Amino acid sequence: MAMTLRLTDEESEALRAQAEREGRSMQEVARAAVRQYIEMDAHRDRVRASATAGAHRYADALRRLGE
Picture 1 (tube, rainbow, N blue to C red):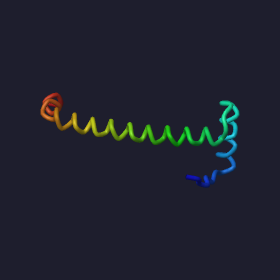
Picture 2 (picture 1 turned 30 degrees about the vertical axis):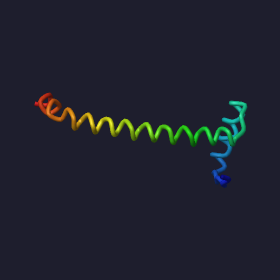
Picture 3 (picture 1 turned 120 degrees about the vertical axis):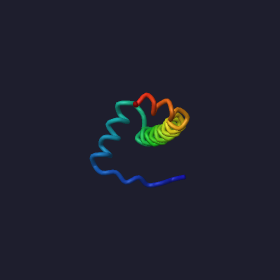
């Protein structure tokens, strides 16, 4: 799927500089950043779900530790 990404001049320059440092195209760097963001967000969701499950599972023990 093709799309247009509108960046500020500062964002565009930062992307260009990063691409040059990495020896990759701006498109490659932008796509990698999008993938990384999605992966990090999914990881946060898994951690949040695990923490919630642990809090429920060990609620009694956590309550007693807090006393």
